[in-house]
Length: 68
Image 1 (cartoon, rainbow, N blue to C red):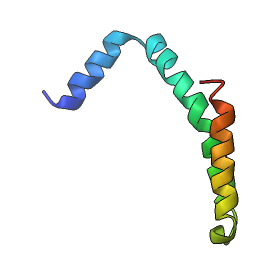
Image 2: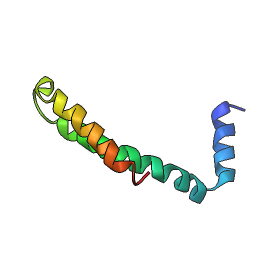
Image 3: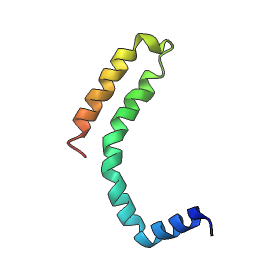
């Protein structure tokens, strides 16, 4: 039996509510930083906004630590 099947079976035994309960805090931590990265990637010349993107990601993570 492949390893993926075993992992899927074990995750199925845990239950969806426990999996969602475990992943939600991590997503609340990462999601704001990902939004900043996506918005900054829309600029044509990313090298000009690189520092702003780095500062935005750091600030987003700092503010999202409270939700984590």
